Image (cartoon, rainbow, N blue to C red; front, side, top):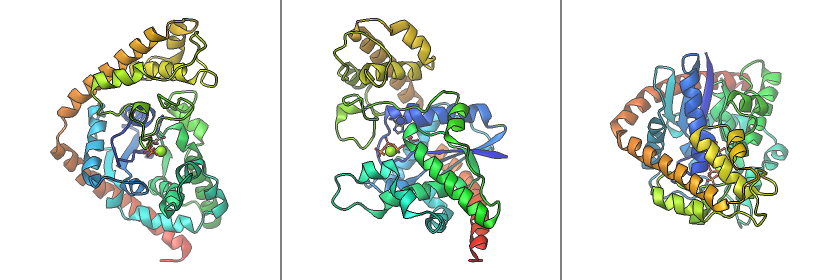
Length: 336
Ligand code: ATP
Ligand code: MG
């Protein structure tokens, strides 16, 4: 059985961008495909520690997992939930892949360039995490990895490492689908990139310090609505979906479409050509605050016990699958 895999770091609360770009698409895919695919949902806690964590990582991890259940993830025996650091094979395969990857290709990663920019000394994890991500994927022969557009380059890197490894040692790893096929599989034309509310040229990120730049999934609905109302737009005076010239207003339309699960074309039809930015903001603010109200209510019903029970089963499964694949890679290198 093939595998669909996804993970969201839980070093802090997640943003609306993470939710709409990664979590919700994964839940929708899982609910659609969990009869025919393994659905691996894991918390990459080892990825979290490449940046500042607040000391509550273990607890945040449990909370993040609750988010999937609060987003109506349907559970069955093919849905596997686990924590990365509870499956040591991830770190082990990462080291093996480190010895396959080149400095040149890893240095080209945009996320690395962005995350290390302006830092006097950046930790090696920031440089190395795409390789750990490749291990996360290759250990489970995952074919589809629903993630936001910012991570596409890492999927290409993973593909290259798998192909190189296989060419040298035989067919050990499943090569994940090309990013354009990933996107198609997710049912859209392109990757999702929700923008920063104040600087819409950039993507919304949980690590951006400015509070009004991002909507956090634990924001009070009224607070989130205010953030939408104060989002940066433009001075064209005419609504048009065009991420290049009018990223602020386009971002609001994108959010409106994703939150309500209606095609972007429908939202464009309704708003393109209009002049009342305020009305659009009010509409989006209403949609987002309704989303958060419903989400918070569902979250209250998910218990810690439920999550721990899932983790016990999921981590036993993950260790079994990952250790078997690791052994193949170790044998290929002559370590076993
Ligand atoms: P950080 O700033 O710490 O990197 P982040 O908000 O980028 O945080 P990640 O944990 O790096 O979050 O990414 C988790 C998932 O969310 C990934 O699949 C990523 O592609 C997706 N994602 C992140 N930001 C966005 C966004 N603005 N729009 C859509 N998807 C996003
Ligand atoms: Mg990121």
